[in-house]
Image 1 (cartoon, one colour):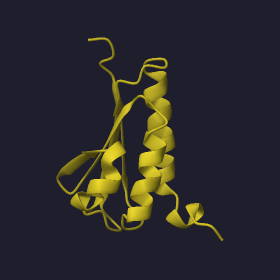
Image 2 (image 1 turned 30 degrees about the vertical axis):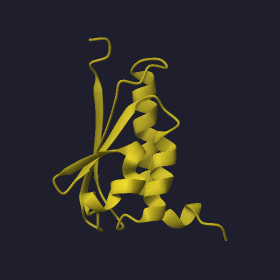
Image 3 (image 1 turned 120 degrees about the vertical axis):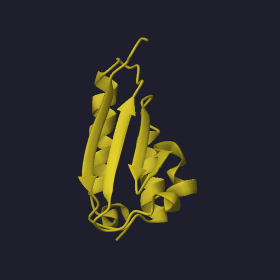
Image 4 (image 1 turned 60 degrees about the vertical axis):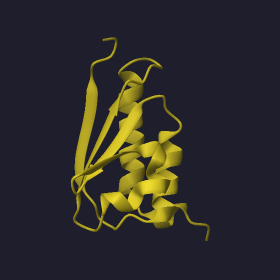
Length: 101
C-alpha cells in the first residue's frame, strides 16, 4: 500500500449544515486529490458529494463531526494534512463568510 496514513480531525458543529455550506465544502474538497470524508450521527459521506447528501449527516449545532483525509498524492501525506486543515477550517468558519454583502 503506497499511502496508508489517514489523517483525522474531530470537532463539534457550531451551526447546522446548510445546502450552501455543503456546496462550499465540496468546492474546497475538489482542490485536492485526497479523499475527504465527513462523518456525523452514524453516517459517512465523501466530501465531493456533500451537495447531494448533506441531509443524511443530520448536522445541527452540537453535532460531533469527524473528517478524514487520505490517499492524496501531491506529495503523499503532505497533501492529506493540507486538505484536512483547509477543509476543517472552512467547515468551522461561519457560512456567512462566503455570502456576498
